[in-house]
Image 1 (cartoon, rainbow, N blue to C red):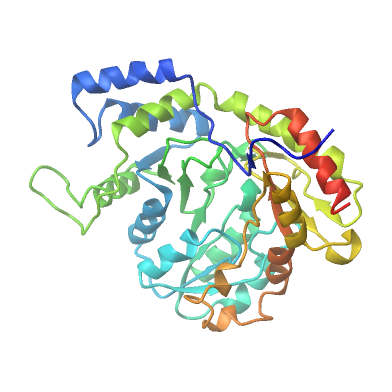
Image 2: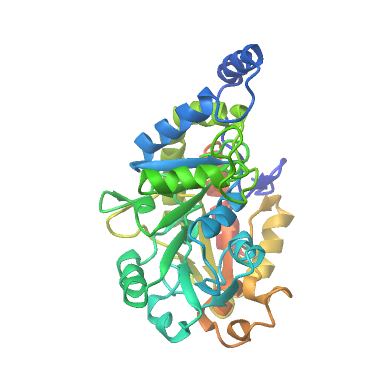
Length: 375
């Protein structure tokens, strides 16, 4: 049997609810003609997400990047922010757009998250905050990070775009730090087409976030801050409400796929897989493997191209490092050799396809392709 797929197997595919169920929401929106500006679906989704995610307050956004930008404005972050080079570029772009200098610190070898043991050496009098990322949905060392933040008087904004429903010993990961930012992009475990959110811990903070995402308006004629337009519309919010009906089922399917990959690849020489973290309820947003060129017999890039030849499109996620892009490469913290773990991981990591509709037979074929390499 050939292991080449007739149709492309992409690294992800958006989970969508039954179209006929979504049409009922659209019909209601069409009849009401209330398309945006804190409509009933927007309000209902904020409440539903608070209940599902186990958080006190959530403010919906049209996308995760605008939520990151607004979170920094909300806490009035300035100067320097310590962050990770191993993330999607939006994490650092949000700092740059707020005229904040990113300071990169290396990552942990086991989780690929910001390494707490490297942070204190990077703190200067200009440091005002930490912006860690829960990479692939693996929670950061939240207690250690909070201790550092408390010692040095720093804020923590978590990029939690991979962590829908993730908990640590039963505590939602979104409840750590000063703010957590979420993404509901089409590629995520839970999507509203595009979309995002900021999670906070008190009503006063949520009120100010809501002002900032709506031009700073606090009433019909009163503007209290130089805000922007980052509101989620009613079509996105309706999709979000419907998606909540199916997200648990989608996560279970992702979990089964991750388990099959682990079982099939664990004994392959030169291929490293990540196990679930103790005490963590995962959402299985991604399935990364690391390819040891010497032991495996071919490089990550060669395997990436070999899989593409068989119509399997993984992703070298995250490659290159943010610190290696021209915009940031001139920074002192981005110099070659400064981030040895991240520099190694970015050359070895490959995310395999994982999404609820991925057939388990396809998973088995992908495992065989990885096992065989270029044979």
